[in-house]
Amino acid sequence: MSRYELAPVTTPELWSALHDIRRAVLFSPGRHATSIVYNDNHPDDRKPGHHPFVLLADGKPVGTARLDEIGDGRGVVRLVAIVAELQGRGHGRILGTMVDEEAARRGLEILHVNAAADALGYYEALGWRRDSWDPSELAGIAAACIQMSKVLV
Image (cartoon, rainbow, N blue to C red; front, side, top):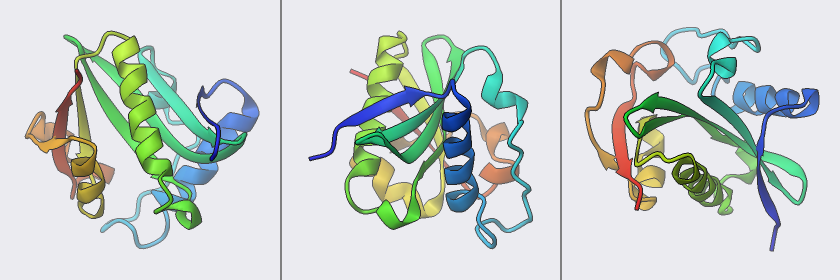
């Protein structure tokens, strides 16, 4: 069994791993209806209250997520990805659980996500439910997504 860590992205090595995984999984050619160029220096990754993470399994990067605190006890989970060749092995479930725990530790009570259609089963299995929480979010990379929410217990 792997030893997991949800590592805050603070070092050049973790930033590199985060960008490599996002580029390969979320911004791969043909994934989106329009061409979206990935920006390694996107300001949202470094905004106060935005927390990028890399999931490490036995010290190796296997996934990414960012948790954005948006106020009123709510957060948005963004840019969730597991290395393509490692998908289907439980890493995503571990990532989801660890992000939930981190959100609860930060005092968040409700999480939101803009889920890609092919990830609905993943989110539903982790307790997320469809919920139109902010239709203005459905633009750019999230244009074809389905909004979901989850109450943390």
